[in-house]
Image 1 (cartoon, rainbow, N blue to C red):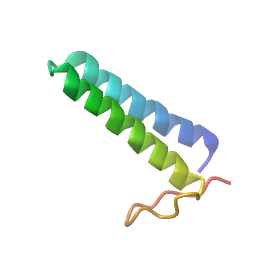
Image 2: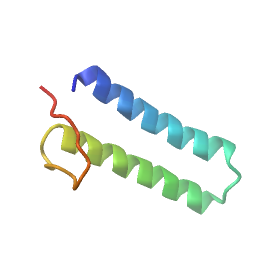
Image 3: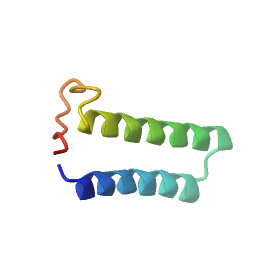
Length: 65
């Protein structure tokens, strides 16, 4: 997996979180929860992509060379 692909995945995660927080009428507590979950998913994905976390169960994330 190239760094560009890794960056694109992070941008897509951020965009999805932003779209959910901007265009859905949900209480602020849930918006904070969506933000925290999005950040957690992105951090776990990056750690797994660099091989620090290992394989996350059945999710296959290619190793960055």
